[in-house]
Image 1 (cartoon, helix red, strand yellow):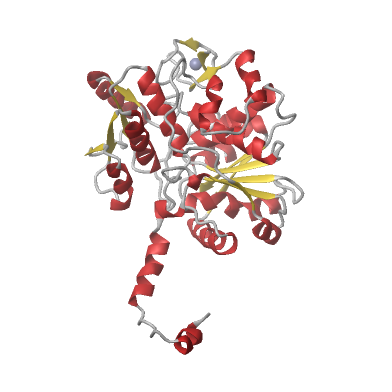
Image 2 (cartoon, protein in one colour; image 1 turned 90 degrees about the horizontal axis):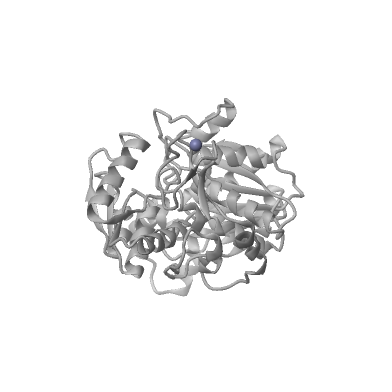
Length: 404
Ligand SMILES: [Zn+2]
């Protein structure tokens, strides 16, 4: 195993955090053939730790809370309605904390143990904080999460419940990724904490946990998908899956690679703009005003742009309203309640079919990033309306009259 820059190929010392010191590119672990070929023999089993030969760990097992092995659901009814009969939904909301970030949280905790750190420091206002907090608790590590002030209370609850120390830091995300990286690094070093920020340009090893989504999908489908559609914020889940598929291809487990299609809100579209304008890098936007938490970001990593181009994929912009409507349709027609970002890939399907970017006969996998309770404003409004209605008497006639 070694680590090297995805742009210029410069190798870095194992364990190095941050970007390439020569060109600023994103660093990535590289495995030798013997490690990659092990993918052929790995059977279904308990958690993502069974893929440890393809992880940046020498001797530390991942703490286990039930992460991974999330279901791949054949959405027959919705698929037929949308014109894609072979539509499969990878439901990452069934991870222990309710989001794919658990795959990263388990990795962060193992990396911290291996580095001999006493705890983990991270910054997040969303799903990463609850995942890291839970896995630190499972691994006996301290956990400090830095957040912007005035976060909605729902996002704080899960993080606090598993014992993390939360500090509110004014303007923590306002100074850009490099300043944030330097700041977190300095805090971590001073306290012998591990820097567990979930974004590859700051911690390049995180993806190695997330890429197991691709391993599982192929095992569950029995083949490679034709198309993988994923919501894109910082780009880690998107790029990590592409890495996983490439490793499966190298190992001979699959004989061809899927096209990777990213979905962003038109109100926060850094990767979409980079693809439309055919730029070499993803530029940071001066704004991000999507109501879809999880993909409301002004910057996406260049690793995601590379995954679009290498795989022959594309990026689609959707409206926030369309994602909310699809969230509801998915819940009522398939019984799967996801966060709005998790509904984004299916929201994009109609456009993709119209454009010819997806063919009706293709095997399509939509990755649903997190569970409905993660961002439950719509359901909360409806629950409020129900509670405001008059009650129905204990009477069969009365209840029968009310049936919709
Ligand atoms: Zn470089």
